[in-house]
Figure 1 (cartoon, one colour):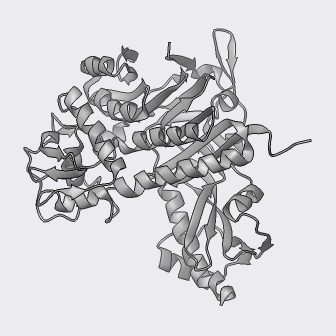
Figure 2 (tube, helix red, strand yellow):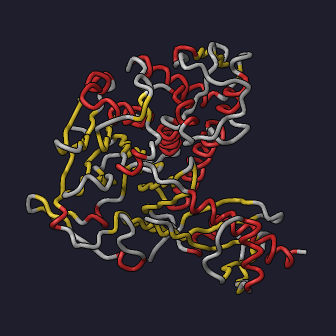
Figure 3 (cartoon, chains in turn orange, purple):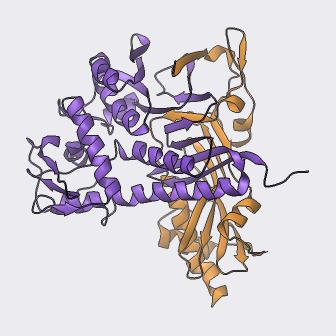
Length: 176
Length: 290
C-alpha cells in the first residue's frame, strides 16, 4: 500500500498547536553557503525615523523593526538577515546581495506556521502529542512535511523588496 | 567528533513558484547534499521563470501574447508541462484545462496578460496545438495558466536531479505539492481549511507524491482560484482534496479535478493509479480512486 490516511483526534493534542515548524539553516551556515570562502564583518545599523519613512516610500512595504542586521562579505557584497511575520507564519530569512546590490540568493532560515493566528512565536515551538491506537505520534518531530492549499510567499518577497530599499538608502553609501 | 563528510539530514527552503519550496535530503555527506540541493533549486527556478503567468518574458506570457498569430517556440520543460496538461485534459474530458486562465483573469485572481484580444469563451485545451518541432500554437483566442500543474512538475524535476546526484532519500515540497523518495516512509500533515475540524489528518507515504487543494468558506465567497472548466464557475462542495500519485505533476493536476468533481473523479484517479482523500462538509473524510 502506497499511502494511508491517519486521523488524529484534536482532543489528544495540546491546545496551542503549531501547524508546522522547521529549521533550515543557521546564520553561519547560510553565510558559508551564500558566500563560499568569505569572512564577514558585522555592520548592524539602527534606522532613524526618516530612514524608515524613506524605505517605506521607496519599497511600498511597512518597516516593522528598526535594526538592520547586515554583514559585509570579504569577497564583496552584503549578507542580511531579517524576518517576516504573516497572518499564519513567522519566517526568518537571509538575503545575499552582490557587489552591485543585486539579489544573489534568498534562503529561508526557519519556518513556523500556525492556524488562524492562534499563537505567535515561542508557543509555536511547544511540543505536542497526538495519539492513535495507543501509538504515540509526535507531530512536530515525526511529521516533517505539510501539504495544503498553497501558501503565498508574498511576505518574504515584500521583505526582500524592503531590504533592497534599505540597502540602496542606508548601506550602499559604505560601498562607494 | 563531528565531520562534515558524514551523511546527515540537510534541509533548505527558498521562496520560489510563488510559495515556499523546501528540499530535504539524507544519506549523502553534507557538502554533496548542498550541491545537489543547489542544482535542484536551479531547476525549480527555471520552471518558475519559464512558466510564470506574471513574468512578462516567460513562455506562458509569450504564448498568451503571440501563439494565436504564429507558432511560438518554448523551452523543452514548458513543452513537457504542456504535454502533461494536454494528456490529463484528455483523460479527464476537459475537467483539467489550462485555458481556465480567462476565468481567473475575469475574477481578478490573475492580472490581464499582455494580449491584443479577449479570449473566445468556446476555446478549450483542444485549441492548443503542440507541434512536433517544439513550438506551440493556439487555434482560438485563449489564454493559458500553468499554475495548476507547474509546481508539481517542478517537484518531479527536482527529485530527478537529486536522484541523479546520488541522493538516496529525500523530499521536495513546493508549498504543499510534494514528493518523497527513498526507502523510508514519511508522514505528511494535511493543512485543512478551518471548516474541517475535529481531527488532524496525516498521510503516511513512501516513494510517492502528495498534493492538496482546499477552500475555505471565506475564500469560496471571494471566488478562490479553483475553477471547474466544464462548468465555467468556481468549483463546489468538497472542502479539501489530497491526491497521492507516483508523479507530483499528476497529483497536482488531479487535486483540482477531485476538488471540483468529488466522486465523479474516480475514473481519472484509477487511470493514473492515484488515491484521493477528500474532506466534505457533511460526510467527513472519504477515500477515492486506486
